[in-house]
Length: 566
Image (cartoon, rainbow, N blue to C red):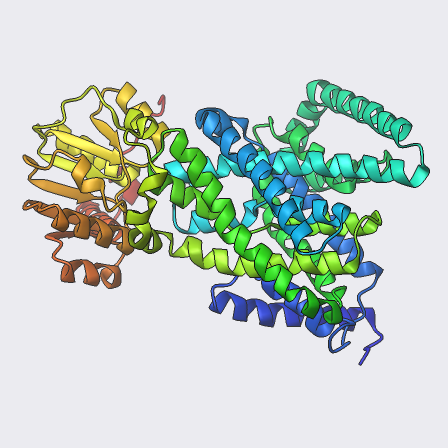
């Protein structure tokens, strides 16, 4: 049934996306899967409730442009530098391994050479958006494996942009028949575009951003306009919209307002990307999905096992522990939205058929769905597989040993504090000022380095690591304090300390009484409730001031104030 009215169809499409998105969220599935399913369900290949036309295509292309813009905007080379060679080695190593082995598998499955190249390249890219979201939800972005994963995901993002440039240039050359001249022309155009953008970054963009920053609405509008404009220019010059939008993000990345750009555009970007995945699902022909199922399962198994395997091998060889390699490796156990965009680009250039697009999409659906569960339950999975992963760790994992090494004595501490964020750092500081010897533990290597430079006793470690207790000087410690409020982390720490035979006292942190209950059952000696305790203290102080303030005197006159000169 075709409704005829574009606005009604648009409303029905959004309603279907919201409904299936709610179901996917309830089932803890990525929304990408739900949105592709929406396109299949209500589009021309399904119930035919909605006609997918130029309006949806325009929204989809705008969403892709904003996605590439935000990727360029977040291009933080500092992450790659701080993680050293491991980000580049794992990023490039995994891309090369997956491309070569994937190409061989595709040939064995009966694909011809050119489609095999597309599929093999599509298998190499992992979803930065999904991984960062999952790591953020688990509060592991600042962990060692989280930083390494983000580092090599940035490397992958750079590779995919270069691949898109090369394919666009190659496709234009094949169509004209004079591919050498056309590729050279595209290269010259690219150099000219980079020169112009460099000059704008030096002389124009900082001034415009400073002026626009006086109004957040104007700043957001300017960012969107710049992203879409460069996307159009990139397409006009013979590149792709994706390349132009990526360069627009890179040009604004050095600006101090880049976090404001990103935070304001995330919601709009995700909303518009909905239409890309819906459009992709709508153009899938159900008749070609069935024959691709067996090939898709073989390639999915390769992505789910082979990609993490090569990351663990590389990281183990570079001196990282098996746990760090395993947790980082799981982040590449899926293909990304860029893989689907690569398939769409290949189809538009005439390089691949609908069958190949369907194959890549099926692999995406399978791997994105399964890898989400793998990452969510990564720590329990690791505990089960840990004995079998010894071969992926050197006898001396020197890189993590170097992070853990400290010049402070490794004995004679009264208290060990896990988690040196605001709450944990204050606890550590107050105990130190009261004459207690405190050893801090945190999984952010940059924070560990900064605190050591400031003269604090700090080691690198993850409270959720089942081996953490064996690495700490527990013999003289009277209290172990966890300032981390996640119940799963605290329960894992309690279990690790118990297995190691620690006989001292343990304090754990919870957000509320509901989170505190399992910690009490696990024999935590003290439960810290920072929000509740702070609220009680603040209420006590306010009541004291209210009782002491004269009725005819403003209350603020009795409140402590800072010197006006400060």
